[in-house]
Length: 511
Image 1 (cartoon, rainbow, N blue to C red):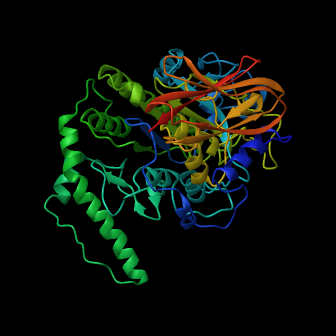
Image 2: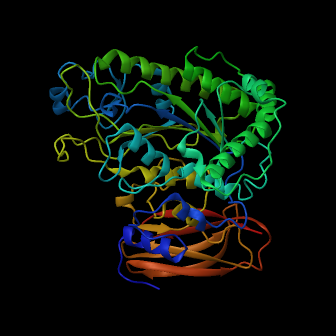
């Protein structure tokens, strides 16, 4: 199969062929996600942990990752711009906020990836609606009532809520469950502020198993019963994990520092929870921004740095990735009260030993703004989420496509991510499907500049076992199927290479 295509067309085509839903669907609710394959648990990477920090209020990206050599930046912010003499130098003429000293040290070690100018088309500037968009993974004009993490967790725990996993499926430090963890099967997170107080609150509380009436009020009652049942189920597990775990260092006395300290105890105490959500507010800096923003980033930097050191000390850091997000950035120009108003695109941080490190994407272009005078985004935020799901949490491409009802090109965030930005890629190899596989598996790849390719099967020692497809390929999409019956069960590598010295490799599990 082949035809003239570009990379975007290929990815869209593969989404359709492999069971994903096409681009451009609007006006659907979260109930449409019932089609996610759930015959068995998704083949995610066991033990991997994602810690999400939500920066509530709209973080000012331009004063976080700073174009301090750009005169337009300083002209638009005559009293709140940060001079390069005091900022922390990164790369590409960009600088980090001077309060983020700890994060800069991690950046210098190659443990921080910063994706620049993340956003989406037709951005919404309402705190509430923009937060919902980021939590659900929807388009700006599409209303979904399920969170992207909730849809991911549904693929990992397909038996929920008929039966519960041994450990909490997600943990949120706070008081009200985020839309991030909602699904049409119910909420996946356990929400608390202190493990021992949480246990004391629900200890001895019976789980009400009476079936609620088939009415609207009954549906709401059923939801509350489910939350209560999950609380009873996990209260002892969380308390025991927190008491068994430890902090090898002293955490900052800030609220975010306390949250990280709890996460550290739960992870070191043996909890197998894959996703944690932490929160820090105060980023709605309409007035007197400089001091408030500096304090916020010192708080984040100190907490993150302490957590990373703690995980290093306990030999746990190879499992963990930290990701930040905020509902929007701020305007390019400061307002009349020494602050900034609601804007659009902003950077996102990824911290840990598994990240590739460095800046991702071009610097903010302050000469070419949208009709409102705001920055245009370089990368869609769902490209980020897709990368995190596939390259850190190990979700396969078909389920990732279905979660977002479209295919989004990944970014070079992690060491096992694509090595080039989407526009620079000359070929693409999809993850084998099915994977794990028995009997046969389908391989799909695209070539975006004519090249001589080799698609081959390798063992984990790098020995070539079989050439699956090879030869000169014109621009187009291709597929091949490999018979696996003569290979022993275990882990293998599928690798696509070209005469342009490019190589893409995915792991294949044979059952």
